[in-house]
View 1 (cartoon, rainbow, N blue to C red):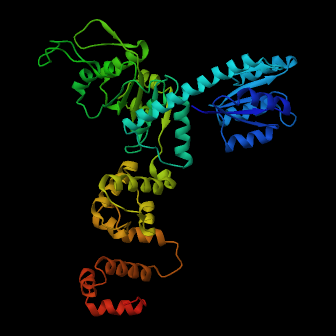
View 2 (view 1 turned 90 degrees about the horizontal axis):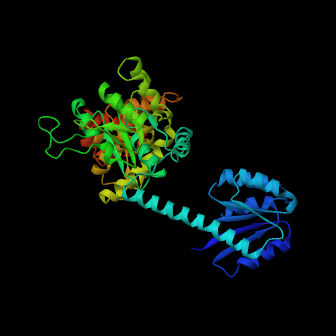
View 3 (view 1 turned 135 degrees about the vertical axis):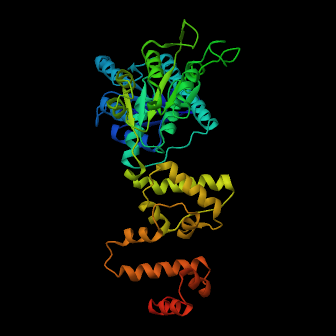
Length: 456
């Protein structure tokens, strides 16, 4: 594995010496003599390791360290310091430096220090590659969105994922709660361990306990002779995602509270507690606080779940993400359906932006999938959307009115022309068929075409 090392020292001789020490090894070594230039170079050519002088002439090394670690926390930085500034070097380590080396340095000690640091880099890269392979293997979709709202969500994910903290995700149906939960798991130290999910609303309440906690053989009439392992045991050492946790019975809630407080549970029919080591991520499409007020959810369990909370915004509150999502889904279904759709027309874009999308990302995905199944065109047009019947809440005309309500022109004229143009396009300019669809004589259609100066 080839590593890139950057030496930042305002003494040219120090830069040359370090370059000579490592040039015969499998390292690419760059050197630079100012902090400002170093920070510009780091953005262009990100190194794996930086040997950074603490006392640069233009910018203090500690300031360079803090800036680099804030932007690129994965880069390992070793401070170079004189004897009189060892105390400052220790302060630098507290600020994120890997270690420090004193001038004049011992060549063998420097080589060993750099070798150990790069072993850490290598291990981190291998872990990340394994994590990516796990995500690809489990088909974790990419989280699409550049809006401030979704970026705030991803920032929370990055902060919460490395810990073992219980996480609560709230948001409307279709906003992507399960995707976020999976993403958290694969960014966590448990990424290579089991990831188990259960939708609490999809399992009858009287069966949910046996699904979660399992049961011993002969625990009840109709139980399996061998007993059954519950989902909590299957998730041991990994993560369990409890989707729609608000649908849990009060009895099951009490048992989950014990799991959170003591790390154990009771199998149905077994008086002995079963230890379990797992991370719990819960989700609800109704705010749990609302369910607490309605006496449908335990207050103590809510507070145990509500330690690290992520609220997913509805798609209507982040409209700037709609078109990027559309492009992502088109690419996805092109591969799945063997099609070559390249995009959408401007009026389809307007229609989708005006559509309420109450089903959020899930509804948008279903719209694009249905249209892609039906269309044979390389561009999705408004008549594809209309013919597929995927915008039932609003007609194309009501969308048209919404989009043109602030227009200074004649809206009736525009609407009529738009309806006639789209009908002609639908029937490939067959005037007789268009007149029939519009419910007017052919002569009336001709009159409107002449009136609106429409090409015939």
